[in-house]
Image (cartoon, helix red, strand yellow):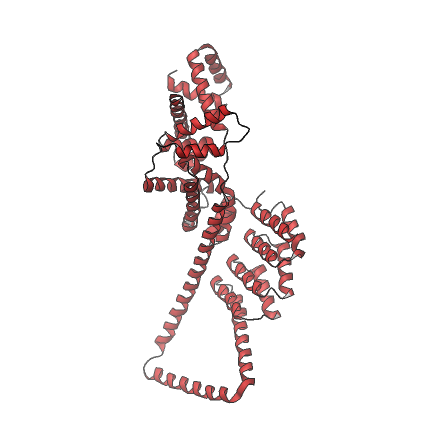
Length: 270
Length: 180
C-alpha cells in the first residue's frame, strides 16, 4: 500500500466508510506501525476540527437588503407587464388608424369636432346637476372596466389592469368589493390575486373588506398570499384575526416562513 | 414539514411569482453565508455574495430546469459568483488579519483555549490552500454536502469528488502541521 492509498484508507477509516475487513486491517496497522499511527492522529485532528462546524448567523442587514432587492424586482416586473399591455394597445390603435384615411379621416374629424361642440354647449347649459350625473357615469364606466377585465380569463395582464382601474375609484360599492374579493380568493394567477388584495386594502375602512381578509386567512394555502394577508391584518390592527393566525401555525402543512410571519403577527396584535 | 419542495417553489418563481423567493431565501441564506465566509473570511463580502446569488436566481429564473435539483443549482450559482468575485478583486489570502477577526467572533466561551488555537491554525491553513481545494473542503466538510451532491455541482463523477476531497484534506493537514 503506497502513501496515497494509505491516506485515502485512513480518511475513510476516520469517516467510518470502510467495510468490516478493511477496518480491521487499518486498526491493526495503526497499532503496529508508528508512522501510520502518526499519520492517523494528524488526519484525525484536522478532520476533527473541521467537523466542529460553527454556523455563523448573518446580521439583519442581509435580509433587509434581500427584501429591498426583491421589492424592486417585483415592481420592475409589474412595469414590464404594463408596458407589454400598452404596446399591445398601441398596436391595436395603429391598426384601427390605418383603416381611416384620406377624405374619410377628414370627414370623421369634422364630425368629432361637431359632436364635441354640441356636447360642450349641452354641458355648460345643464349645470351642476348634470356634472354630478356625468361623474356618476364616469364611476359606472370605471366599475364596468374593472368588472369586465376581471371576467377576461384569457389574459392575466388584462385582469391586473382591471384591478388597477379600481384604484381610480375613491370609494367602493358592494358590487366592486364582491368582485375584488372573489378575484382575491379564486383567480388562477397569483399576481392578479395580490393586485386584488392591494386594491381591497384601499377600501379597508369597509367592514366587509376586513371580514373578507379574515375569512380568506382560514382557507388560503398559497404561502405568499398567506403572508400578505397576515401583514395587512397586522397593519389594520385586526385582533379578530389572531385565532386564524394560530390555526395557520398549528397546521402541519404551513411552511416555516409563513408560520414565522403568523407568530410575529400574533405578537404584534396581542 | 414544509408544504412545497425547493423545486416546486422555484417553478412558481420561474412563472414570475417572485414573492416566493422569500421562502427560498429563508432556507438557504445562512448556508450560503457560511459557504462564502469560509472562502472569503470576510463578513461584508459574504453578505454581498449571498445577495448576488439571489439576484441571479431572479434574473436567470427562466433558465431553471425543474428536473435539476435546486440545491445543486444554487451552489453552482454560488460558485460562479465567487469565481467572478475573485476575478474582479484578485484577492490573495496572504494577510491573516481577516481570518483572525473571523475566528475570534465564532468562538464560544465554553471552548478550551487549546481548541480555539487549533481552530485558528486550521483557518490559517485553509487560507493558504488553492481556491479549488478550499472550495471542495468547504462544501464537503463545512456545508456537509454529500459526494453525490458535490458531483452534480462540479459536474464530475462521485469517484473524482472523493479523490479531490481526500487530496484537499491531505494538503490541509500538511500546511496545518507545517505552520505549527
